[in-house]
Length: 280
Image (cartoon, rainbow, N blue to C red; front, top):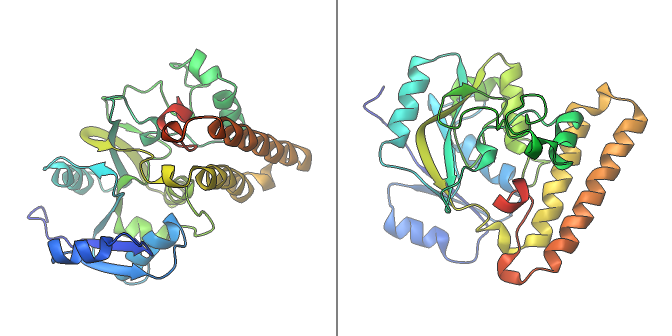
């Protein structure tokens, strides 16, 4: 298995910058699939999953979700595959993600964003008590970033998924245009009985936000829309109607605030909901 037989699939979401042609000319070993419709992150990745036979007839034992704004060390994939091979209970393995300034991308080890966990995060309690497992669960800052640990979710920018786990849980939910789809998939894989593990033995650089800054207002709306969708899908039926309305109203207020704040910044400094300064 660790002789490494792999296949690369690049899904182009209706780009107009010559990416498919460049990939075909410079990387003939990579299968390029052109989508005529930019249906979002989940839509594009599902095209790749289906090309690999998932969920009904998988052609591979593992699948790696990898964003174009990441840089993998030479031995990263082999190290991750070895860990997965040695730990069959693990359904998803996520590496340590480092931003260009050398700091941790906190999204690479996350807790389940229940209404209470989200409240502690957005009110700043998680920053006041970063080592408290009760208040700081949103980004699990109480966990040592250099120690392998079970988490609620890794991040779709780079995560290795066991093929059997993906087939059991199903593909990405395409209602999530961008953001939240990895949380949703990780949660469904956990419910299938697999572990989600953060594995800092592999460190990946994440050039976070480089693509989404091209349409910051649209991406901010997508970020907060995904929060409402995630709540509706996983939590709404467990809470009273009044609390659900309060959650949606709070998310809408946060979205409006971020849109205004971003609009007032110089274009070069505009970011989206998941960019580094927005998740500290």
